Length: 113
Length: 112
Image (cartoon, rainbow over all chains, first blue to last red; front, side, top):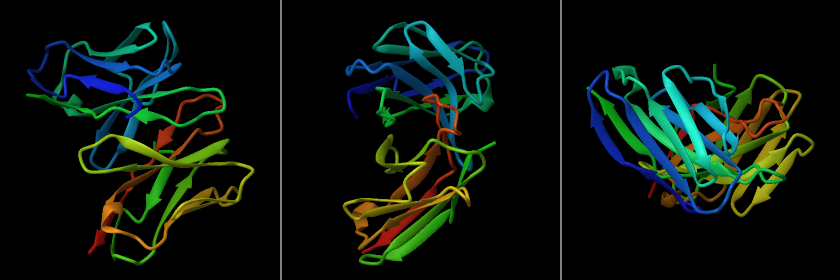
């Protein structure tokens, strides 16, 4: 896992509540990513970060925001959770440079009721 | 829309047989990666092939890339039950960034 942890691992929340997922890495990788995985859709990029305080949107960013105040932490916030955001969320990190490999965390299963 | 589309969606073979999965993509790329995902786990990087490479090997894995057809294939030789997993291709879309788009995956089941 190259030192990628996610918290919480499971969460059940109600529609309309804010939710924050945390990703922590120990390898000092420059790039960090948030994906969601849904049946039939594979992994879809929500947001990614190319440095502290530097972030960019992915293909499914609506309803999500991110923050990266330290190299090791990348937070994903659902401002007001909806049932369509029920999914498994994966964080990943990568070194950049000549290395394109991404290292993935174990995932967070989020259920919005 | 997905940049990479894997084919087949699901594949079931006997242990010892070879497994071939294909990935098609839509735009030019700088490189293409293959990942494996065991059930309930995060993805694990398998192999990367650059746009100027046609074939690459890593252990029992063989990856080919045909940029004219915008397709790649992953061959797993002499499959084992432990190879049972989902396999995904990921492309950078020629963006020059480290932002990747993943396909929908092929679910491989290797029967002992």
